[in-house]
Amino acid sequence: MSKIFIIGLPRTGTTSISVALLELGLAVAHTAFTKRTFEVADAISDSPCFSDYQQLDGLFPKAKFIYLTRDMDKWLPSITMLLEKMAPHLEPKTGRFNPILKRSFHDTFSVELPLNHHELSDCYQRHQQRVYSYFEGRDNLLTIDISEQGSLLKMKQFLEMEEQGSIDFPKLNVGRNVANWKDYKHPNKISSNLAGVDHRKYFDFYYAANK
Image (cartoon, rainbow, N blue to C red; front, side, top):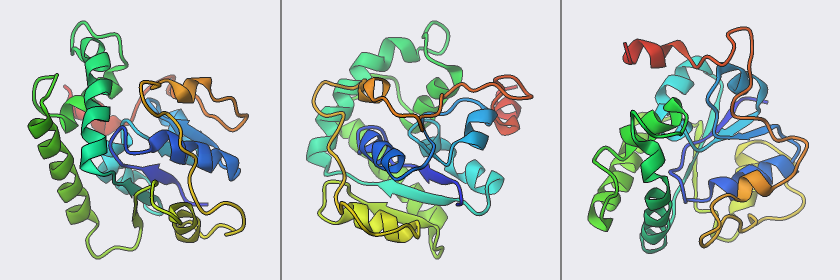
């Protein structure tokens, strides 16, 4: 199977689609910060996929991409809550989050955090326009809203998987529960920080851009 990259922004259903892919038998990483994780996982979601999709497309030319949309009235309060929690840890110098994650968020939400709803809406629309422009005329991008009936079936068809079973996604990581992936136990989960021959190095384009 080709690599699968989930490139919707945080709080658009990345946890739900990751769990669904696990249950379909794939090895899944929710966030990935090393080359080894990208090599081992069948599917990767969230950071840094939503910011690095163009580079990943070049590195994995047979990959399939899934862009997640969400109603703006629901996404704005949800992403606001998340970014308020994350903001101190996204500080470039003092934040405790992985540098790849910090860069991914700052590249996408490209003004100082926290953001108001107008700024966040602009970030969402700018990201969406870039995704659609990049993949225009191609057949390796699927756009779905996981809250819509039949969206899981659409994903199975896009990935050329068996269509039996549920046609809808599970609803996970809702409300103020933003650590659901960590709590979800499954043998196919892949660590975000796997070490390989390059230890825990990311792809070269990241280091070239940050010299």
